[in-house]
Structures are given as C-alpha cells and as structure tokens.
Image (cartoon, rainbow over all chains, first blue to last red; front, side, top):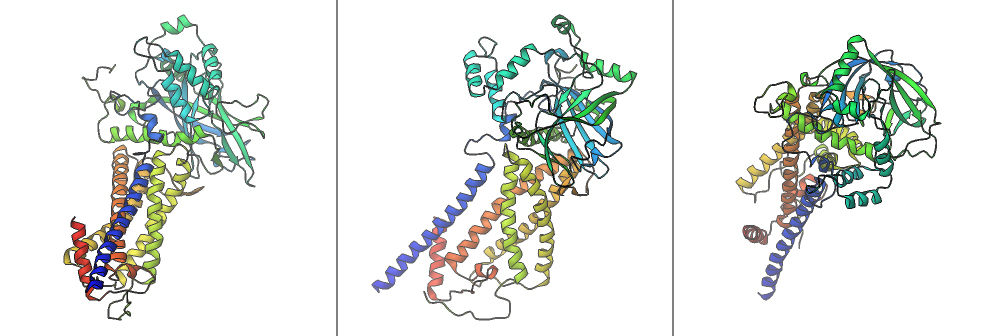
Length: 366
Length: 206
C-alpha cells in the first residue's frame, strides 16, 4: 500500500516536471521570438533609425529626403563594364530608367537653400527583368564607419532646447568615438554648396562587388558624373534664393533638353577600404565610364512613378553583389521600414498632399 | 514502466512516410523562416542575406505544402487516441487545418506583396518569379500587414502545437506523438493512465 502511494506521489511530481519542461521550452521560444523582433533586449534594430520620425510627419512622405521630384530617362551602356560584370545593364544599348532627385532634409516642405545635400535615386530595369536600384548623394563619403555612428551623430548634433545649438560636450564625445567624422565636419564647413541638381556629381558612397563571367570579383564604387558644369553660389545668393530654387532650375534646364550623367565606376585595388564608407579610395584608382544616363523629363512625385519605389541600394542585379560595407547593409532594413510606413499611409488613404490630395487643415500645405 | 506491445488495428498507427518526412522538414523550415523574417525586419547587418534566404525557402514551403495537402487527403491517417475528449479532438483538428492554411497563405501573401510593391521575387541570382499582382500601394500595405500578422499567429500556433504534442509524448503517452515519428507506438493502457490524466488535468487547471 505504501509503495503504491509513493509511486502515485512521484507520478504527480513527474507530470508537474513535464509541465515545467514544456513551459520552459515554450517560453524560450517566446523569448527568442521577442528578442528577434527587437521587443526585448534593447539591441539596435533598423526600426531604431525611424524612431525619431516626428508624429506630425506628413503621411505618405519619405522618412528621409522627403522633398523630391521624379524623373525618367534612359541609360546607355558603353560596354566597358562588360569585362567586369555579367549584369545586362552593362551590355544593353538602352535601359529604361526611373529615378528621383531629392533634397537631403527629411522635411518634405524644406526650402531648397536649407541643406547642402542633394541626391539622385535610380532604378534601371534591364531586358532580362533584373533591377538595379541605387541611391546616390553629392557627398563624397559617409561621415562614420558604421550605421550606429550615424545615429550617434544625429544625437550629438541635436540642438539643446536651452541654447538652440548642439551641446559641445556631446559633439566632442561623438568625435572621440568616431574620429573619422572630423573629416566630414571639415569637408562640410569648406566645400561649396551646389546651385543645381544638374551640375552635381552623385556618389554611391558604399562599395559593391562586380562579378565577371569567369567569376572574378572586383570591388567598386561608382558616381554619376554630370555633363553640366558644377555651379555654386555665395552665401548671400543662397540665402536670398527662392523656396524651390533647385527644383525650378532643374525644370527650366530640362525644358531646353535632356541632362546627362556618366556612370563612372572606380575599381578598388587590394588594401582599399572596401568595408568603410567614411574612407575614400586614392585618386589614382582606375575608372571606367560604364555608360551614360540621360534624364529626359521630370514629374511631380505626388503623381506616382518614383513615389512608391523603394530605392534600396542592396537590390542589385545578377552580376553585382554587396560588399561587407556595414552602412550599405544597414540601408536595406532602414529603407524597407521607411517604404513600408509611407506605402501604408498611401495605401490606406491617410496621405494627403503626398499624393496630390488637397487638404485645407494641413497647416504646412503650400 | 512496462511497455505494452503495439496492437495492430484497422486504421494506421502512424502517418505515412511522406507525411512524416514533410512534417519534420517543414517544421524546421517554418520555424527557421519565422526567425529569418524577424531578423530581416530588425537586423542592421543581415537583411540582404536573410531576404535572399526568405524568398526561396518561402517558395519551397509553398510547393511542399501543396504536396503535403494532397498526401493528407489521399491517405487515411491515424485515429485520435480514445482517451482524448471530443473537445480536444476538435480543437486539435481545427488547429491542424489552420496550420495548413497558414503554410499556404504565408508564402502566397509574401509573393503577392513583393509583386504589389514592384519588387522581384528572387529565387537565385538572375532567376526571378513572375509578378502575380499589379503594383498597388493599397495591396502592398494590406498584404504586408497580413503577412506579418499571420506570421505572428503562425508562431503562436506552432508553439501551441509543439506544447500539446510534447504533453502527449511525455505525460499522456497515448501514442499521439509517435504517430508522426518513427518510434514504436506506445499506448499506455494501464489503469494508472487515467488517474494520471486526471491529475494532469487538475494540474492544468491550477
């Protein structure tokens, strides 16, 4: 009798033990899920980069470079890229192009003289169906070696409410952690601002790898080098410039005829900092002109076209792959969240002037 | 504990080999895909690589679930152990069909959302699937949200399914778990079995 009750007792314990085990397994899975989703653990995720988007941000606009204009055109390959990459775009005579010129400010209503940063985004679709998406800036290099550095830079240069200027102690701490950013600060202080989208050179900044037919890999960066000459302006000229000066200038120039940029590919040599976008490669590196982009006309982004395109530079065609540049890799997720957020707003009808809908209560609507 | 010999009866004691292989293969794939998906949406570094995994594995799951579904309908399956209540049996059956529905719906919404967003469905470099939907912000948003919500639901269902299966394997020992494995079917027909289930139910209530 005693023995039976002991066994019965142990059996109750056994079931308890089993339930505990199963709970443990289930909660481990839940924890792994929550950590992976960025809900626990506090790791920096790609969502972190959008956390500062103000709640008053107008629906449907891009989270960065909000003010822009769509363009379409044609890319004509020179054939000089063919020995380096099997991508069709390097061989095809005429590749249709859709893209976007934009202002560096996140504010879609920013005046054109408020930032020195202008960008070109581009998507080339070759006749084999492969897409080459890219995002280029007129800055020659990235400020920091990695993506977290960008967040820290934003934080460090945020104006303090008391003075309206950045806190020098925080800036100093940032520059100590990311000393390469000093180069950017120096460049930013001295380099002339562009007075036209047409005369700006747009640089990819990040590194990529070309894959040739024989499998040979070649690390590259590229730029869109303008046929139009670079023009700048004095500080006083700039301050007096009209609100949409750069965009008006672009439209005016295109009325006279198309604008052209050469796709200049720079070939890295061994030892060049492929994985660090804050470091430029030596001037002497070999360059090839892989083709020429013709921008034939521009149209309002509210009408669609480039509006819903995610110009995620990690979406490259066969024959091009990504380098281990951490800033390039981080762009994928950040662009995706920005794209998802704004396309949701547009798709669910929350966007107003971002899609050309007039709304009277939008105080910023011009 | 004394092991009783398996007593053969008319319905099969195990799911057929195809079903068992597909079950465990897809279990691994689905669990991996959920974490690949989460990683894609959060990782600062791995998104391009994870995305290149997510698309071909997703399409593979779509093909496998079709085979699995046909297999499920074509062959008879083991009966639920007699000790299982009607409610449990219905709940388990519903969960199983919902799991099939999710396995079908997740790859399809993934494919469709990429189409609606103007993205390529890249299986391998240079090999893309055709678009199955016109480009549309509304459809993209809707499908993207549906894909996410269903992925979270699927994860809950998978954890529920696993917990229930382990409960049967370790506590009830009623042969339910072994019907999807290669193990000997173990049916505990002793008197203690019912006492155990009773105490188990009490524990569950606590």
